[in-house]
Length: 263
Length: 95
Length: 220
Picture 1 (cartoon, one colour):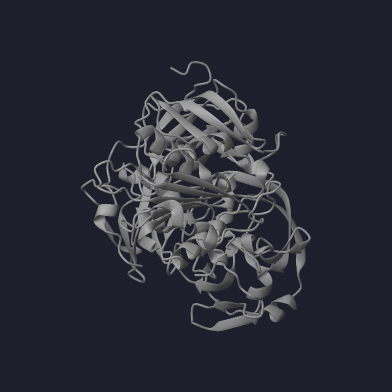
Picture 2 (cartoon, one colour):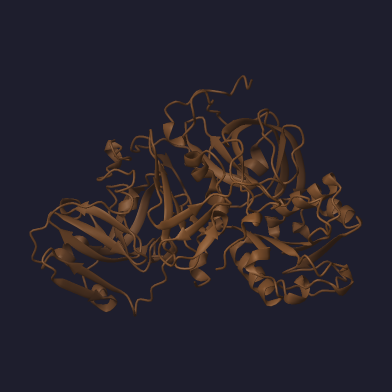
């Protein structure tokens, strides 16, 4: 593995992530098995797009457990949004998606993860093009980047390739359609098992053709694009191999895998 | 590294929380050198094994144990003996 | 600030909150645990799942390549192939298991060979053993904790072969101690005249690990 240039690593430090009280203040259903939960976290120090939080839930009998979830949106005041996909066999995600009610509280630690982040570079002469590759609910931290681009007024070229099993699984569908209208933003859906009617691309897993920069994208030759890949482990491994075949290097691919223990 | 053996691990990213307890800040961007094969990668790109008695960080290239953290009743234990070097960037720049 | 629902949970020291942090009960969160009370070791909670916890990558070992070796304190080695092991008298085991991460699972059913059987003809003056696994994991045990029908080389779970994520093809089963002692992907014992710590015992966890005495951490 070649060494990562220091300039790409950001700095360490910042406020110490502590366990903070967080109260559920907003709910939005995304699909039948996923919802966005917005928490009031009065002491929240702010975060970057792509970071995650650790949640700690404690039952009345003292049982306590922790899970990590990606943050779905840029910080707005002291509010932190996550989008949770229910994992049937888990003990946490079914509670979050089905049972937790407005006003209920848990503990949140973060933000965590200063590597898998994107922030605008308004001073750069040419902003680096960004390829976002999402598998299933791996779209959540990438959605935070799309939203941060819009919030900050960045003009960085963005392309999201979002692989889902079937049309019923698409998170953020209306908002993604809206962002796709923005200058410099392209959104492409890939269905792995079942497509909508009359969808041109047949169902199947992501290929080099899906990830290659479209000739009409107008991306600059320099700087080369950076890819952010997030999804289940097998999806991420496959996407990384495909990107390496397309000429991406380890330097310009950042990945975040989530495993079966995410429930 | 076979794909199979990768299936029960996550990115180092996912271990950043427990290590935060020790260091007091997010260590995702620290460059960690493997004491086994000498490969270097940022903490976020190492391999993490979570949920067991402790949090374990291993080299993605050779599986060597790089570091582990355990929290007992009143102490945090940190073992970095499997890694030869940790390099902490000081200056912020565009990430 | 949080009013009702906010309680101090000082007894949950393992969760690592700092002075002044409030422990918060999350209303309605119960996990997926059995509702009925049962006799459990202190600080344990029931689970229906069988969580998969490892300190390293899952080891895929074909039984054709598998072997189990006992090395005595004098360096004598005795090795069993998979066929050798299968030829030994085995038995069904039904037992509760307790993980130091606080879950317990009741009435699990296993199949395997008592550790007594493989140690029977080994000449040794050792009082301890180090269990070794494919992948490098180790855990130490006094011989008295694995003899007299207290421990097994387990290769069956429920009604099938032991799944690889739970340590298949074969793991150590020592159900009266915390489950980190029940090493997955077992491939050998080294017999020792003096005790040495294994992977977790040397790093924060109790040397012995009796759940009924709550021997979780070093110093407990």
